[in-house]
Amino acid sequence: MEKRETKTVFATICGRPNVGKSTLLNALLGKKVSIVSPKAQTTRARVTGVLTKDGCQYVFLDTPGYHRAKSGLGRAMVQSVSEGIENADIALFVVEAGDMVLQAEKNILKMLSQNKMRAFLIVNKIDAASDEQVLKTISLFSEKYVFEDVIPLSARKKVGVDILLCELEKRAEPSFFYYDGGFVSDTPKANYICEILREKMLYNLGLEIPHTVALTAESFDETENLIRAHITVYCARDSHKGIIIGKNGSMLKKISSEARRELESYFGKKVYIDCFVKVKNDWQNNSGILAQIGL
Ligand SMILES: Nc1nc2c(ncn2[C@@H]2O[C@H](COP(=O)(O)OP(=O)(O)OP(=O)(O)O)[C@@H](O)[C@H]2O)c(=O)[nH]1
Ligand SMILES: [Mg+2]
Image (cartoon, rainbow, N blue to C red; front, side, top):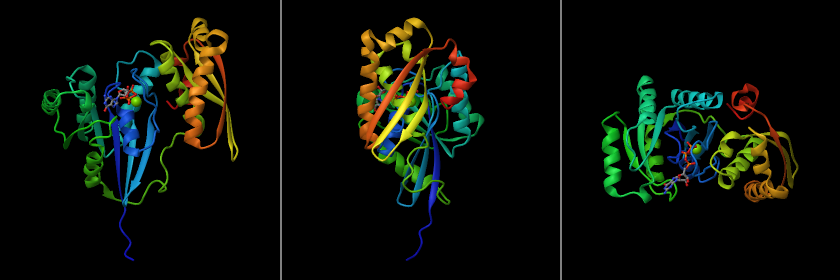
């Protein structure tokens, strides 16, 4: 049988916070590798997701939402956006239908033009917008950059996602595969557990607290039927610690059991999570903790 040539394309997903970058990555892969929430700055460190299909390997990089950085954490997040863009073949610049070109968008466009990046404009959330809004957004952004393609889609409803894959495949270059065929994400299992726990915190706790926590795995053991992880939750203040733990431990129990349910179905085995909450002032500027969370 004739051996078919393989090809690959590296695409970095970038945009302001909350436009649906991580939802798009998960939709492209058909698997949840990056956490999603209605709160801004959900993604903190880059997540690589790989899809291998019909002789083509797509390597996607989900990046944190571009924002004005105020701490070591924020600066590391923004830095990881620019590194992600520099290392890609194509940038997928995600905006929301109805968006205008504001400061965050201008800064990303600047990064694109500085690197002379080939880029697609992805107009997400078309399920929640009118055709006029979609067209207006396309026309506003198309004035600012020469995009190779413009793709309106709904990451949540998985509408238009296959068109994006098809357009990316056309840009893939002949190459060996960088990852094994079944490889989906480079996030270590222990970090994935921390991320799913953080996602449940984003849903269960108010606006401020989830942004001031960092989770690290102190231990991780896996057997054929069981995963056991010991997680430290760093938070900024004593008062936050009380809220995270909740009355008689009720909040931490709720967060852990929501995470456990999802993780058991993801890993296909029992998961035990042991969480310990610690106050650590100013962890956002602690390079050791930032390194542990992938920044
Ligand atoms: N209506 C609608 N909502 C969407 C769509 N895609 C994503 N969302 C929602 O938008 C919110 C943000 O989604 P995320 O994927 O976390 O956004 P993000 O761009 O990765 O955010 P950061 O990581 O904070 O930069 C979530 O509530 C998603 O469910 C879509 O196609 N339509
Ligand atoms: Mg995200």
